[in-house]
Amino acid sequence: MATGGALPMVDLAPFFTQDDSDGVARATEAVREACLTHGFFRVVNHGVPAELMARALELSPVFFALPDDEKAKARQAEGTAAPFRAGYFRAPVPAHSPDKHEFVLVFDPKLGFNEYPAEPAGFRSVEIRIRTSKLFIIRISKRIFLPDRMLHKFREAVEECYAKLTELGLLLQDVLNECMGLPPGFLRGYNGDRSFDFMAVHHYFPGTEEENSGLNAHEDGSCISFVIQDGAGGLDVLKDGDWVPAEPVEGSIIVNIGDLIKVLSNNKFKSPTHRVVRKPVHRHSFAFFFNMHGDKWVEPLPEFTTKIGEAPRYRGFLLDEYLQMRMSGLIHPPSRPEDVVHNEIKITHYAI
Ligand SMILES: O=C(O)CCC(=O)C(=O)O
Picture 1 (cartoon, rainbow, N blue to C red):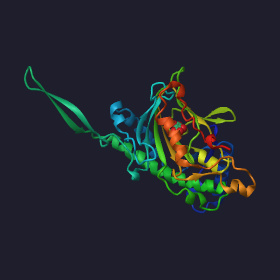
Picture 2 (picture 1 turned 30 degrees about the vertical axis):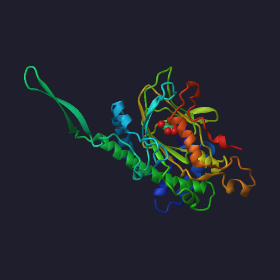
Picture 3 (picture 1 turned 45 degrees about the horizontal axis):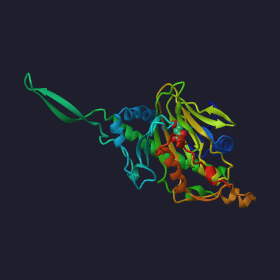
Picture 4 (picture 1 turned 90 degrees about the horizontal axis):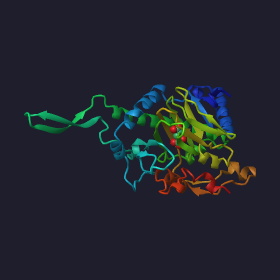
């Protein structure tokens, strides 16, 4: 299998080419092998335009450069109908939390949950001072329109990325369906509701030699996760006890299998542990989580248990319960330092 840096690499071009059934079979086999061994791989020719990925990464710093109080306003109120609160979050919250990064959580734009700063089209309050005499200055607060509309462009790029990554999620879900030997279209039917998918737009602050934790080691609670990253580096995946870098390779997307596919496949497919180590530079990334609806009951599928005479390795659970436990640890870290255990709730909670 080809590798892209230290990770297996899968060329998805055959899925976008007419009548390339040999190519499709080869790419499907490459995904199967990557899922059985790493759970992590790199895709190229994936259908997300390179220009869009570059534009989104270029515009992300425009949002994060806003004053903290302006960013903080871009967050949904408690008690939202969204699976979690959308909008801006900053770690450390509280100060002793181990992560040093900020992020924006975005849902499908059609659901109307997303929060952006109040002036996404580039309106700004500026103070104009007019001297009327030697002694008097009048101060006028005026709203001006910034011509470059950079924040508006950021929002557009986020929403375009979201749509393209949803398409990629649907494609890879079909590929996984084949890799797992499930009846054609099974996963598409079982997981047909996209309202729990979300994207995290991350900004990691520069690390130092003494302090460089970005995201602690964790597994994803998703079906499939996708990462678009800038050139800074720092995403590592655990393989046979060693941290392997998921190096930035322009135009490629990092894919990893999440806990839900691991449970459905009764541990056959890996949900790899990964982390982000902060380098001495700012880092921006987009992590898209192709999930399942919270109302789903999740348990190992018969194809991996009764049909092959293997015992299930997980008891069934309501997905929402698992997601809420995970997200409460991330977004509302406990107030006592000794309780800070980012993502401590793991899928092993349901292991038999
Ligand atoms: O920023 C990254 O590269 C990875 C993000 C990630 O692992 C996550 O959001 O769970």
